[in-house]
Image 1: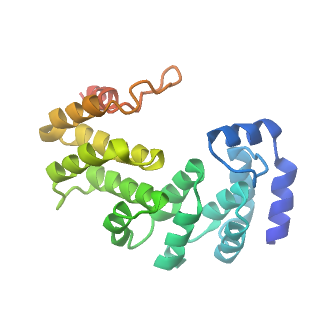
Image 2: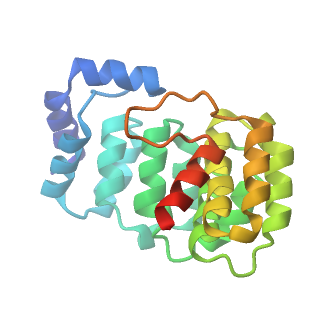
Image 3: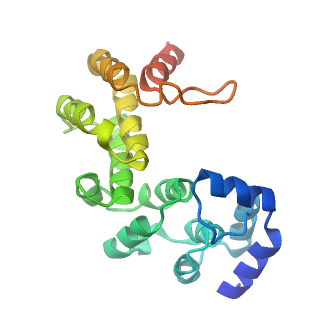
Length: 221
């Protein structure tokens, strides 16, 4: 499929209700409102096509960018290209896909973690804290979790909402996976109160760190 063929296909799949939902969640108007399941079906038909992915990303269209993420090859990005993708996408749903399917799978992702965590660009900072949350949960060797908790306690309240979300993920992962730091992680969560009143659907766990930590620890037992 060509870029124009993909766009035509996505346009035909657009749903006004999904379009409106996406707007409320922070997407811009450059979208067709395609259901995620349909986005995946389009990507499945294309399979892997990195050159096409780069073309689709340049359109800025939310649905096209979602397809681009699914058909790209993480190892074929240069560091500069990947950082440009991170900076250019402000819709959190697409940013999360970008992290899950590309950044997390990037061969040398560690080069970005501290650089992005210290970036003035909110989407880079968001991605950097996502990388840190992953390190905390799966590869904590070499991390000073006490220093990390100090930084979260000092900076999270003033961070942009996009960055707060992944800083909070890091805080929760410290509490969940590292019993010796759990008490302090819980205290910081209570003190900051971020997401304390966050609405959640029935059966879902609150992102409020103390609730999240205690629930996941309970499941481990």
